[in-house]
Length: 150
Image 1 (tube, rainbow, N blue to C red):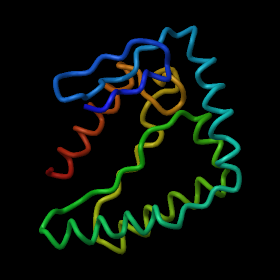
Image 2 (image 1 turned 90 degrees about the horizontal axis):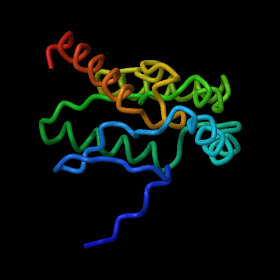
Image 3 (image 1 turned 180 degrees about the vertical axis):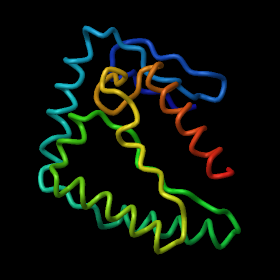
Image 4 (image 1 turned 90 degrees about the vertical axis):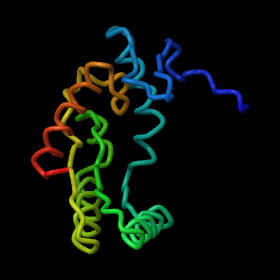
C-alpha cells in the first residue's frame, strides 16, 4: 500500500470509509496563514493564465469517451474563494469561463458554474472547503441537479 502524504494543513483531516473528506477542518485563526501560503504558490502561476494545452485535450478526450459509452457527462467549475479567483486576473477568469462554455456547447453537455457558491469564510485556504463549505456546496449542487432532473 502506498503511504499517504501528511496533510499540508498540519491539522487532522477526517475521511469516511471510502476516503471522502467532508471538508478540511481548520481553526479560523489559521485560515489567513493558509491563504497566504496558497497565494505564494498559485498567484505567480496564474499571472496571465490561459487554459489550454494537454489539460484541455484531456477534457475533450474524456467527454468524447464518456459520450461514446452512452454516459452523459456534465462540466463543473469548482468553488474557489473570491481572492483565489482574483489571482487569475480578469482575462484569465474570462478565458476559463469561455473555455468551459465552449466545451459545454461543443459536446452538448450542461455546465455548472459553481466558482462563487461558497462564502469566503467557508474555505480553509481559498480552494479547499471547510465542513461548512462542503455542506453549502453539496446542498446547492443537489438542488441544481434536482432542477436538471438528474
